[in-house]
Amino acid sequence: MSTLQPVRGTHDLLPEEMRRHRAVIERARGVAERYGFEEIATPVFEFTDVFKRTLGDTSDIVTKEMYSFSLKEGEEITLRPENTAGVARALISNGLHQSLPLKYFYAGPMFRHERPQKGRQRQFHQIGVELLGAPQPQADIEVIALGRHILEELGILQDTVLELNTLGDPESRTAYRAALVEYFQQHESHLSEDSRARLTRNPLRILDSKDEGDRRVVADAPAFEDYLNETSRNFFAEVRRGLDELGIPYQLNSRLVRGLDYYTHTAFEFTSDRLGAQSAVLAGGRYDGLIETMGGPATPGIGWAAGIERLAMLVQDVTPAARPVAVIPVGEAAAVQALKLTQELRHRGYVVELGYSGNLKKRMKRANQMQARAAIMMGEDELKAGQVTLRDLDSGEQESLALESLPARLETLY
Image (cartoon, rainbow, N blue to C red; front, side, top):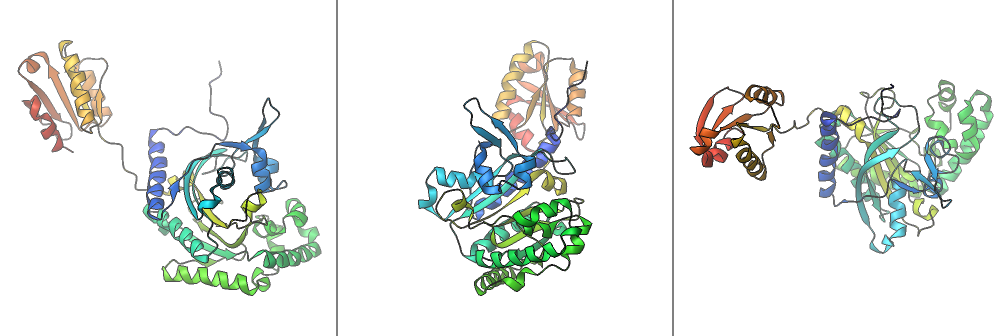
């Protein structure tokens, strides 16, 4: 008989890992709230067209990585590979453009059919933010500052570097794209198969290719900054000035790009050398053309996303599980009173474990295995006298005390 295993590229979040996972979400949510970002949740699947419109019919995600299905009605749906498209669709579907600007935080699972590796699974989880309806560079500054603040709260900021670039406005991008195509066509024979395919549909993506041959060609490619118009230069200067004023250090990376035409101006990533080849921890940028591409009104936007699994791998300071109180009835007559006491203590905020069976020795062993802070033993004679026995499982000291004084005594142990 074969042993059932999780599907390749998925894994179970068992309690210890789940604590780290939850710590990332809760700390990020708390910081986002301080910046005025409200939480939103979109469906884990959307009509496939939502992603084809936003990611492009020829992108790797759409052609190779999406999990898509046909419904009985003939409609095509896709498990979300990222969440910006879902948030943008929610803005359009719910007519929210009347309430701009809007600031959203989200957390949840995403799905991509790619080769599983360290910190990257086929079902993975992300936190992210989207700021919609603010065209000013101050929005870029705030979104980057929020991402940095979350990394700081998680205790991993010192392990990351902020990389920054500008993609310019559509006019600058069009001019640069033409220059890139002309340059790469002259060196097409030295490009990888993937990059040759990108040459006509997505030439900017060649700039971040990991292929060694591509990288040699890219080294002498035209620089984006030579094609920026005055509007684009001024916008980027404002973003940099704001980051400088906030004391947020960054490194300029002219090869940091986003391949789709609706991306404009600021692109950024927080990277870490503690994650192997896939160094991005938190990545984002401005996407002023996205919602219009989806059929909605022209709406500026900027946001970022971060993989929870990858953040959790870096986090060191995670609050351990609360140490429980073990309630141990001795004899059948004490079982009912033990059940009542267990509920009372839970209502007072304690984590309480009531063993379901076993003698005193077995239950005490179980209490030690679960690292209980204290054990409360209740026998028939004690209950008749209105007392219980409390054992401090750290010191081993044991005492009898009145049942009504138990809550106050427990407080001294926590």
